[in-house]
Figure 1 (cartoon, rainbow, N blue to C red):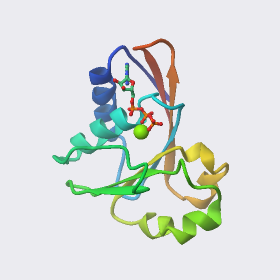
Figure 2 (figure 1 turned 30 degrees about the horizontal axis):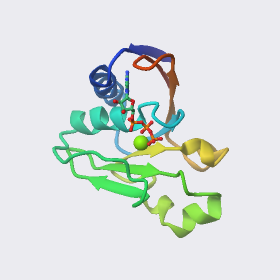
Figure 3 (figure 1 turned 30 degrees about the vertical axis):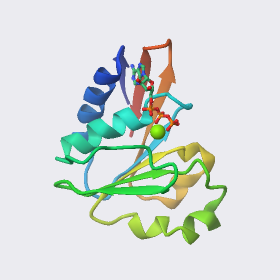
Figure 4 (figure 1 turned 45 degrees about the vertical axis):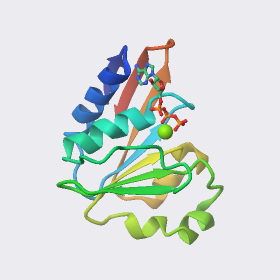
Length: 139
Ligand SMILES: Nc1ncnc2c1ncn2[C@@H]1O[C@H](COP(=O)(O)OP(=O)(O)OP(=O)(O)O)[C@@H](O)[C@H]1O
Ligand SMILES: [Mg+2]
């Protein structure tokens, strides 16, 4: 377990880069944190570490955004997903365990999702103030 403290969106992006250095192809990152916690900011850092140059934006409407880097980054938003059958239907599991890193916003929408994954870590983000965040990597 590793804890990071951020006091700006830029610091959170930098923390994302640090977290990325612990990841490997095939790993899933399960974010847990409320709206506006900074999940997308962290994803910008993770994608940047792997050489993604495209803008990283919330995939809320697309459900998954794919970014090309040294390692492909698959960025999911499960906000609108209700259960495991819906995940299967959207093709979620086709991305898992491949050569990319899966970064998952709103993983808490599917309790027990980790039991369907072999290689994952949690990243918890706690809003401690308007601009401050406590970020915990659990692996
Ligand atoms: N220390 C901080 N770290 C991250 N974001 C911060 C911080 N301080 C302020 N913010 C603001 O909080 C917001 C975080 O937005 P972001 O899209 O990353 O959240 P999110 O967790 O992905 O939300 P959503 O669930 O809506 O997708 C941004 O508007 C950002 O400017
Ligand atoms: Mg987001």
